[in-house]
Length: 258
Image 1 (tube, rainbow, N blue to C red):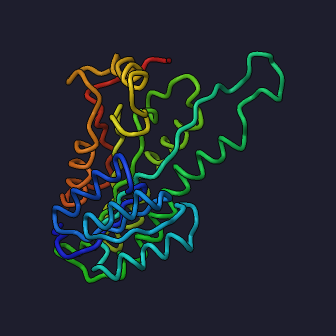
Image 2: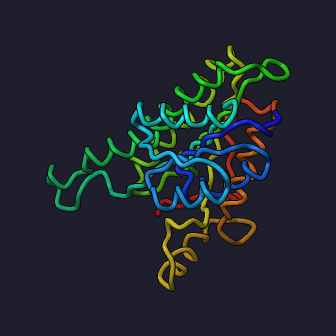
């Protein structure tokens, strides 16, 4: 699929995986809407790449619709890459055996809401707009790339909420691809492993933590780079025969329990 002259939306686009993807989509000729909650970083990036910043909570239908409408002003909407998400780590029960120390239900709900429901919200609304565009070759109208995680398969101790949310993203990949085939929209999912993003912070402590993380990586012996995720995301957008798949990008890492 040729994305030159079309528009694309990248959620969580102001940093990390989303930023790298927004930059590469721009290099390939798309006009990008950077959807994020971080106004400062989002506006700077959007200006730099000649795109538009949209402040939006991925779970808020009205805000996402506004972002979709902004994308339509830039060109026919052909691509959505969902990178927005949060993490949470805590064990299911507490050490003291009390009900009060069990995993906070509100935290579990929030992780599911942003990572899974937010992904679906953006997918359903962007797909609605894509379905209104003129079809390209083979009746293709657009492509959606969602972001899961290695934790969807190898969830560690304390990752029940996060793993459930990302497992849900994997689980809805094929049904979404089947649902949206009627209007020529493809859906794929990337399950990244340990990628070196700003989420880990900076400084000696952060570097020590990242060095510990890479113990599960097989080869190459390092954390992944956001640009490597972006390369795969753009391939999934542009390769018209890729559909309904979840692809791990993790250097053959398999996470230990903790």
